[in-house]
Image 1 (cartoon, rainbow, N blue to C red):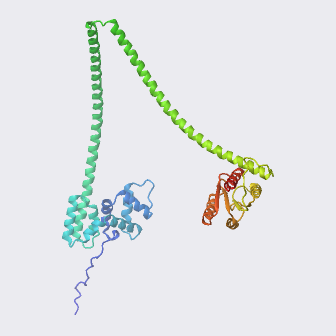
Image 2: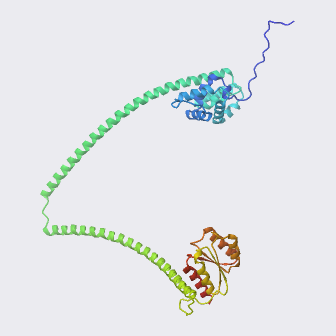
Image 3: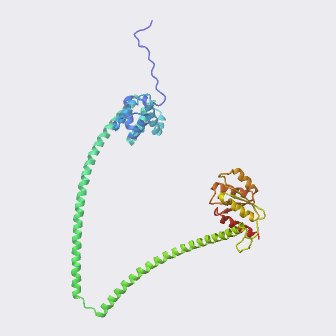
Length: 398
């Protein structure tokens, strides 16, 4: 027969085997956890990440209270708090999880209290799966009292700080007053020393024997010569500096003159070549000293780039020299596939560097190198530069 007076059997609630999340910790501990283990900067960062809305002029306490109110809920805020606390105190958590029993946990907490490193140990212990209720109450009570003691200490420190600031202001005023008094005493002593020196000079002047006029004249002459020497020395220094500057300027002008002479020689050579080319284009059969000798012997000349309007003149000049001429604009209007065919048949390729794209010029140069073609870069796209190179080519044949 059943005994109806007996209480039904209630199985004990099994203790968790994993660490607790902050929403699983007793809600009364949330305020102490957030206030002890996280800084205000970290709390405000969590608020931004969780999307919690606060008033524009919310205080630090408002931010703290907002997170305490959501720490016990199963939401994004609680997950972010747990993740931040676990990451921040990972090393301490690992140490606490390796301790064998409640006694070892209590010893670790006492050591943390002595060293002052309580934030990480507090979170590691309140979230520990095997900590006893009595030890948890002890830890919470000690942290709670520490917050009161710290507040009282801060108030005392603030009071001492105000007193110290007043003392510093008073000491600064005294220091300025003493400095002023010391300076006044120093000035007074300097005036007295100056008066005594003047009296001593007057007394020595009365007793000193008069020097001969010749010695006085020599001393005056020596003083004048010393002044003139000093003036001459300064003038010499200025002259040396000007000479150095002038020498450097002369060297620079000499380099510029050499460069100008080289450019002038190149222009004169191009002028002679263009005059000779014009004579041939006009059918002048009279030999002159500037007329280029020889011919191109039927070689194929390909001109890439440049100005299309000059192409007929280039062609006439090449044909006068018994050569063949083809022009390609480098891909501006004409196809680049046609350029490859022209280059394949060319004996010499001319390319003006001032009137062609950098990419096209490099491709033409690379093709000529790979296929053993003569590549001749021109300084400009004018007729003179082209005539100068043709003149050099036909002259070097002989």
